[in-house]
Image (cartoon, helix red, strand yellow):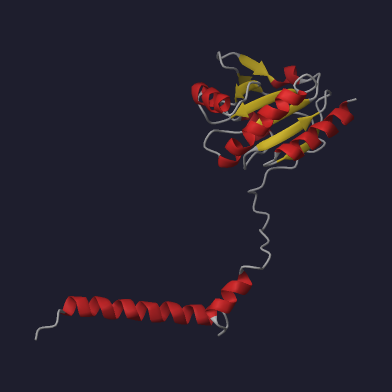
Length: 196
């Protein structure tokens, strides 16, 4: 009877690897049962260090004045936005949370569009992709490209989406990440109160 040595060797190595991994898990958990440690660890609060991967806090800051591009390639200075309450949403098509919240922005625009100016800023997509993606989600408000990431850099954006709520005087009174329809309405109501 002939034994296939390569298969025997591969099987032995696989068993040895499993034993080493199992031993490492037990040692890493201080000798506790690995299953218990996994269940306990899953309930621990994880705190992340301040490693520069969070968006800057802009609350109370003036709206940065930079140049954006419109759908026709014209330059638009953000200084021209000043004069009425603003909801400025930074998003792009390959951002799942952005895609999820855009229909809520379209709905809020339909509800508050006479009182608040809604603006979408896109730092990544082509004009065609930006407009198609937004339109598929019901967005009909102003969309601009941040072609050279001037606005994105000016607000210290790292994570998307970001929404700024800005008074008619140009002061940022709130900044959010992902936001749902209810919280969006609440923030807009507070913006309107602050702008009265």
